[in-house]
Image (cartoon, rainbow, N blue to C red; front, side, top):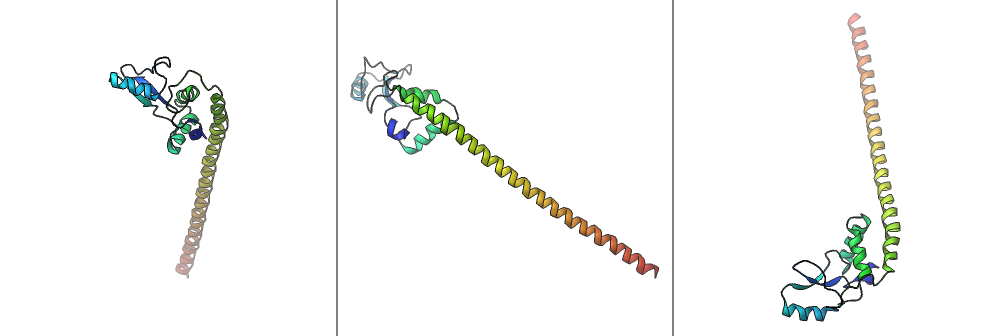
Length: 161
């Protein structure tokens, strides 16, 4: 869903000397940015590193949102996104906040609980295997001691006769 909503919309015309995007009053779209690039070498039409341009990058972006590591930058880029090949406008699509809030509620918390549940279940299975294994070793040891005990008694009886 993120790829459908945001693919190609995280590009912006950036001044490379300080890394700041140009305001929409100066540069409105990609073609104006390219015209500015012909005049100055300090201008680039740049995409964010984390974006939704394809499914793989979309999953990576959502993973970053789910882990709460740098997710605000992604959310703000989505809220500011206008259209493909257009310069972002501050809080242009306010309803995109809803997308991220819903994803955080369902994607992060429920998925995190599911992940923790799987880890705990695997831990309990391994613990059960270890306890059964140690039980078997304990039983084998008891049998060895039993046979050693009766073997010693049998040897003592045969020596005394």
